[in-house]
Figure 1 (cartoon, rainbow, N blue to C red):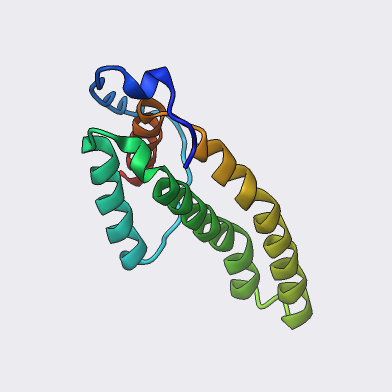
Figure 2 (cartoon, rainbow, N blue to C red):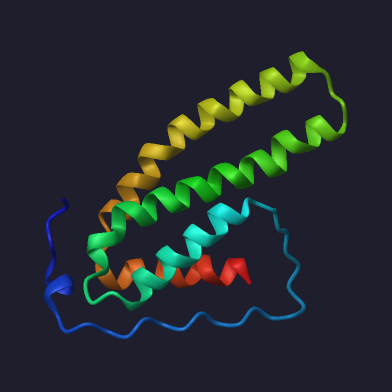
Length: 132
């Protein structure tokens, strides 16, 4: 477990509300499994309402990784399948994505693993906003 900070020990602050997105802003979305969606909602609720969100930072880091993996697969690998790009092209792209994920995973875990409770609630709210 990461060391607790003075911010962790301070009186709990209410979780900030996610700001509504302006309607005029363009966006992209991706689809992911209902199972991942259900787990994500449950964890976000837990983090946002926890008196000590730090207890859930490892789980939140893993959720961010799972959502990142799902997004990378959807945006980069799925189009290759739809385009019938061929086995070697798909395998090459898959290998490249796997390497990128292996580099990204410890960085994300480290960043989220060092966050205090207030910051974790901000991240949870942001992820929830993306899910709308």
